[in-house]
Every structure is written in structure tokens, then in C-alpha cells.
Image (cartoon, rainbow, N blue to C red; front, side, top):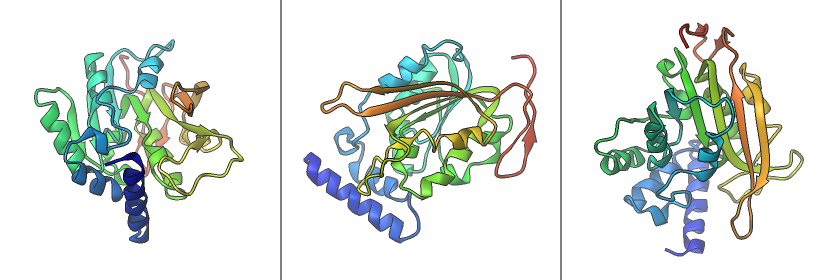
Length: 243
């Protein structure tokens, strides 16, 4: 399938899912039809995201512990974190994507699960994760639905933990192209992470090497040790000791 035909198909899947009031349902349709073919998933590269890997080299990034990968797709980023020594849980709303992860990575230590960002289990929030890796998941959720997605991501960061986020970027005042995905994210939108108790540690705004280049943001947020945070469930937790 050529790029134009794939784009047209995805736009149709997105419109249909939104009309049903289930804006994330289109992921399962896309992954099911792809049947494991990377060329039919626009963001799948059969390798970990290089902007995430560069982010892991930033000062103060965790070098181990528990890690969570939302919207893991075919699992390339999750597997990279496992190789770096993390105990990784990775989830995707698409059962077909998770089936493919388990097929591709049969002997992997990564725990692959079917999960919905908007209905996460409490065990993700308590005790939380030392690292949450958000790569291109929120930008694939159409507005205004994704406004509710920043909070669940932040709530999974344990006290003393880190969120590394990689995304397409746009100016705060710029209009969002209605014909996504992706729908680039503004810095103002990311303030929602701070509204859930995280603090901004670093922010990078750069152009990648694509033709034409895409504007990217790479951001690191941290939850201060000892800070109480409350997730959707109302559960409150303090920092764990011994880290």
C-alpha cells in the first residue's frame, strides 16, 4: 500500500472511531489489518526511537528500576529499555499489537499487556514506575480527546521517578491540522503533566533529519521524592524508601 492510500485509510479509521465515540478504537483496526507488517504501521521502524535513546543519555536519567511504556506498538522501545536493565511493563490498546509483541519477542522479559490509557489499573499508579516513557502516543490521539491523556501518564510516575516524553511539536497558538494523525503537541498542553505533581527538568525543541524536517519536543519531567500524588482512583502514595 502506498503512502497516500495508507494515509487515506487511517483518516477513515479515525473518523469512524470518533463517530462511535471511541477515539482510540482505530488503533486495533489498523494493527489487526497490518497483521504484523511494519510497512502498514506509519510509526513502526523495527528499531527503537532514536530520540528516546538520546534522551536516556541526558544527565540524571534513571539507569534501572521499573519502567512503563504506554502505547508500545510492536515493542521496540520496550525491548530497548529491557536491554538497558529496566524491569519493563508495556501496554497497548490494540490486542493485535500485543499479540505481535509476544510473537516477535518470545523470550523477552518485558511484560506485555493490553491496556487503555484512559482506564489504567491502579497497580500502575501504586507504587508507580521509576521511568515512564511516552513516545508518540498522545500525539496519535485526536483533540479534544487527548486532553484527558496527560494525567494518566503522569500519575504512573512514582515519587522520585522520571517521565521522558518525545513528541511532534507545534507553537502554542498554532492551529492543529484536523487531518491527523499525528496531531502535534504544544508546550502549553504539557503543562498538564505539571498539574499532576511533576516538575519540568529539561525541554528540547529541535528539527529532526527527515525530509522535510519535523519539529520535535523531548522533555523530562520528575516527581519530587516524598510528594503525595492523587490519581484518578483517589489513591495517594508517598515516595518509597531505599532508592
